[in-house]
Image (cartoon, rainbow, N blue to C red):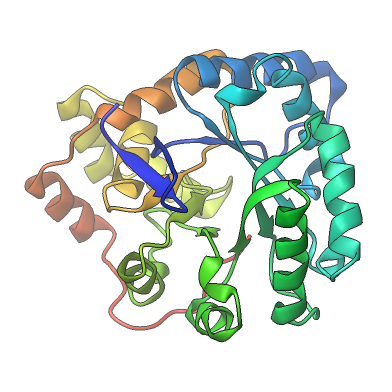
Length: 283
């Protein structure tokens, strides 16, 4: 596997992980979801991302089942609701997540999006969880550049280990300011929905003639091309959801795809980079 991303100067992981949004919503699919996550581990996709929000904890439960007997093979990420990110509420929320995940620690615990709890209080909660050994590192999600600058100005804010944001070829806004600033500070960015969520943008990507032609010439799928594009820059890790073993294996193979300058030129023609600041896309 060629491309890797290092978190907190300690954990070097393949630049593609596994997302779990929409997992745990239907018991009829549970075993298929468990097997897909385990197949991802077999392929070396160590990072598994989940959240207390996903299926009201159901996704964490699926992850917990998938990791039985294999916990040390995974780098486990979960997220806390903004209203649970207070100094004491975060402790209880984390303990509930740990119970569903059937583990004693979360490797990276994120504030899911910014709410009304002051950042300094959330930082204190995260530090407290670290001291208790319940989490190893903490980070944020859905933070735009102004949010990150404010976070970095808070005491302890420099220990934020990642920012997880929406990023795919049809949503390139972070390239204007947020991504360069994070790269400058060696802060990894986790790209959620790297293949775009179902709907207009996803259809635009998967039916684009230029992308289809590039993928065909390289002998890969459009999905693999899109994943390879997302992780082309240093410090970016993609977390696509895959609920079948074949899909997981396809995602993992994208780690070895190299895009040429000509590929990138043609992709930029079809989906140009942002010429100015754009609001942070969130889904």
